[in-house]
Length: 303
Image (cartoon, rainbow, N blue to C red; front, side, top):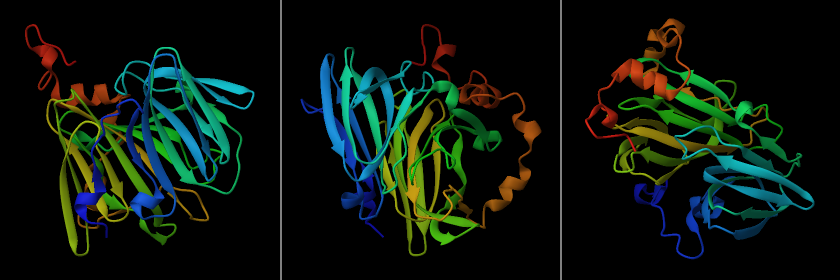
């Protein structure tokens, strides 16, 4: 197991090069996945090649044109990650990529080693299915960007929104052993954002012989090579994480295995409990109402 102080990464000052965060198989000591977060300024162009990885470009703020040979697509995000679903883009292994922006963009470049080639595909907001998972203060929103049935080799990408004071990745689960159909062996990256930015969250990762917990701040990244994991966000704040996953199962899946000690909570959840909930904002209002909201204070807001 990688030492705990090497699993959690803090954002860099992007400076002139624009690189906020970067981790790949070499740094993480695993086989497949990586994530690069890059800021590209107004009127700038960023080019790169991906000879070994398939990609998913997920904007966190801003918009840009992405070129691949003679083809071009527009990617964008309305506001921040908390403002709405992105227009993202899947690109195959072997791509020579050009990103041009007039107004500036921050983009998460999700990667997985791949040997099979699939066509580029623009992922529009209407293509991203939203799932309300869990219930009560373990209810959260899952936005499915690259699902197991998406035409790709290994890459899987989702966004998770955890409302004020709630838990996600709960009950604690793992996916570090190939025991299909009960459990898939998957590497995973969590890239976090917290709103407002002065907030915090807590992340636990544990297994035989280790039990780690971290205070999560806006912009942090956690490598999850193995072990059970669960997340919660402080009351008054919203947690977001971009999940990048990949493995080498014969069937492409996100199948987790719950910690048997806590799996019982699933049996207390019913569809009726989340009836009418469509977004993380709906969950937050049902659980907290105006508690923990800055816009409930005179002259205040949540931004």
